[in-house]
Length: 400
Image (cartoon, rainbow, N blue to C red; front, side):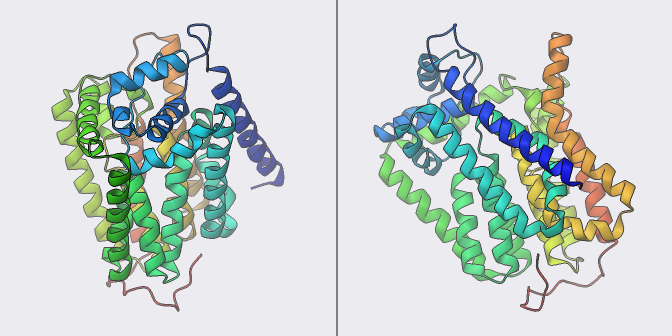
């Protein structure tokens, strides 16, 4: 990548962080005279409830909507579906002015993501960052947690590749406690590589963090969390979430008019097939970094509840796979793959533009595009493999 393009990319990310901070500040106030609040305002509201010892109320979508409405113009459904650990993590942010909290959260998690990406990708870092730039810009625009998820996942994979099983497991355990549906690739990595220390550390860390958060937040939090998941499932089945921003086979089918039950069933079948393909491919790979990247990539196909900002995790998966992909894909095919990744991350924004031009349009194309890309990558990596089982990682294995 040319120096000019690098400078432009960094500048765009910095400007988006500044604009996101400004949007977070200007949205607060009496509605309807203010812009719509963004996802980060929901995080602030949850943090305030956690500080007051009322975290259980955050899982009541109606109660949380009342709080969000008092903060500013509230026109979309912004429920809180994360485990209690994440709610307690947000509590310190509620002590700050909303603009400072936004800048701190978005800036710190972006720095974590970029630092991990640099260690994983080496000379490919700018390529990986450019491939997920649209998803990164969305994350910075609304103050979501895509950078945090990707940073923790990448750090865990990096530690695993360096034979630091306990540290890798602890990091994976933190992510499992915060956002379990996007952490499943890490236990799979530990299992397929027979890294029992990492697997045990991840399970213990996730269990202890969850138990500590439930103890700290009070006895009513767990029932409220479970009830909130059921309520959000009802919202999803009723089509109340922005399907055009979602990146899953389930969302694609629902946007196409398929019933919620059938869409979820098909999604489950596709997810199982993707898992089987990933496991079969990893069993043949000679490159442990590529194997780790493929398992992080398949994680994005498992949950029906996946948004465009979550595709920042794809940057970490690409960082691990790019050296292997460069060996088996001619330049133009690799370029097309990277363009496809960027296109998938920007489909939500494209859909919003089309909906503005063609009111009533329903579309959610990210899931199928992501699935096709995953199959193509897995197929390409199999050409870079030998048909022998991969032994456990050893210190002699080169790592990024």
